[in-house]
Length: 494
Ligand SMILES: [Zn+2]
Ligand SMILES: [Zn+2]
Image 1 (cartoon, rainbow, N blue to C red):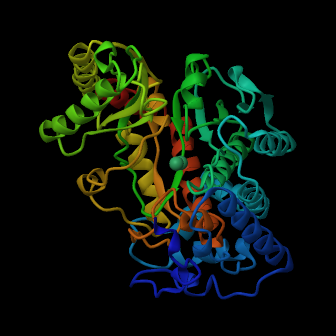
Image 2 (image 1 turned 180 degrees about the vertical axis):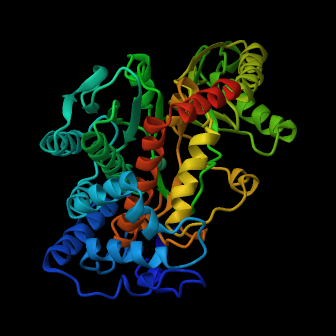
C-alpha cells in the first residue's frame, strides 16, 4: 500500500512552469486554532481507525498543517489565473463580464468557509455504506437552511436525499453528492469532497436561477453506498432520476481526467453443493465441493490468457470447508467480472458461467450462481464535457488528449448506470495540485489519499471544479439548442 508516504512533504514540491504561485505558499501559512484543533482530532481519529482495522498503523503520520483564509486564496486564484495568459478565456474576464458566470462564482465563493467546515466534519466522522446517518443529517439540514426543498430518506433509502430548487417542466439538472467512507481507511476515496462539490454546484446554479428568474429546476441527489452496493442504482430503479435531463458529479483523484475509463462490472456469488464424507475412511462416498471451487478458480486463471488486457476477473474462496478430515459438502466463492464496456461484461459473464457450471459437472456438485447489481461503465457525454473543459481551461487547467485519458484504467462506479439512463459526466479532479500533473504515487483508497482529502488544496480544487460543473449545467438551462445536442449525443452513444 502507498500508505507509508509522507503527505506532509508532498504539497511543498516545487510546482512546474505555468503553475500558480499561490500553491507554493498555500501550505506554509499560519495554522488557525480551529484547524489546529481539527488537525489533532483528525490525526487521532485516523490513528484510531487504523489501530482498530489496519495493520500498518505505524506508517500513519498526522495530516500536515492547514492554511488559513481559503476564501482569500480562491479570490487570489481567480486573479492569478486570469492573468496567466495561456487560456483561451481569461478567468477574470469570465467572472467580471459574464453576469451568469459572475453570479455562480460569487455564490460558490460565499459558501467556501461553510463548505470547508462540512467537508472536515464528514472527514473526521467517516461512515460506511448505508450507515451515513450523520452525513445525511448534516447535509440535509444545511441545504434546507440554504433554501432548498429537502426530501430526507428518499427513494427507499434511509441515508439518501434529494434537495430541490427552482421550478420548471422544461429543464432539470441533476447533481450527485456521495458521502460514504471505506472501512479502516476512512475517506480514502475523498467522498467528503464529492459531498461539498455537489452542494457548491447546486448553490451556484440556484443563485443564477433565482437572480435571473430562469425556468429550470435543480435536483441535488444525496447518493449513499457508492463503495459497496450502489445506492444510485437503487435510486434509479425507484424512479429518482425519471424527470432529470442531465446528471453530473465530480470525483477527487490524483489526476485531472474528464474521460474516466471506469470499468463496468458485475459480481457473482458461487456456491457448490456436494456431499460430506470421512476424508480417510470413505472419501469415495463424498462429493467434493472444494474440488469444484478449485477447478473454477484454476480455469479462470487459464482463461485469462485469452482475455483482453483491459478485462478483469478476480475472486476469492470465502468458505472452503469446515475441517480437513471431512470432504467439504459446501463451498462459497465470490468473483468480480470487469470490462471497459458493459456489453463486454455480459459476454465475459457467459464465459465464467460456463467455467462455474463445468466445474460442477466435473465434480458432480450442484452449483448456484447469484449475480449482483452490475455497475455500468461511464458513457461520457461529449458536449457536456466540452463545456466543463472550457470552464476548467478558463481556470488554468489543460487536459491531456482523450485517448491518453481513456488509457488510464480506473475502478468502477454506480454513476455509470446513470450515464446509461440520461446524459451525464463524471470528471475527476486532482486534489493534490492544480496544475494538471498526475501523482501516480498516491492512489485512491489509501490512507495517504484520505489525509490528502482533508487538505486546503483539495478544497480549492473542489470549488474550482464545482464552478465549472455549475456553469456546464447553466449552459444547458440557457441554451436549448445545446441541450438538444447533449441529448442527441446521448442517444447516439448508449
Ligand atoms: Zn472509492
Ligand atoms: Zn469514490
